[in-house]
Length: 82
Image (tube, rainbow, N blue to C red):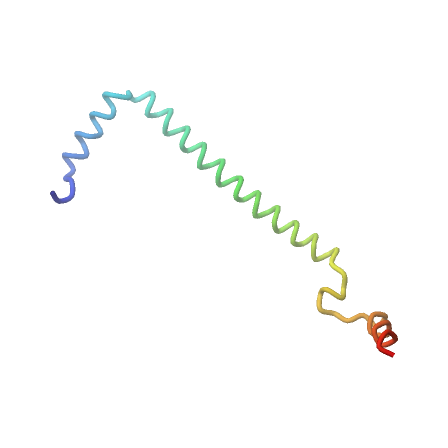
C-alpha cells in the first residue's frame, strides 16, 4: 500500500504505449505543448495590453484626479464658496 516502485511505473508506461502507440502519444504531447505555449503567449499579451491601457489612462487623466491642484480650479472653488 506504499508508493509505487519504478517497476510499477514501467509496467504502466508499457501498457499505455501498447494501447495508444507512440505516434498518438507524440501527437498528444505536441498538442499539449502547443496549448501551453498559446496560453503563455495570451497571458503575456494580456499583461502588455493592461500596461498599455494603464499608461494611456495616466496620459488622459485630468490633473485634478492625479492629485495635483490646478490654480484655476482653486479659484473657481473659492468663488463658489463666496
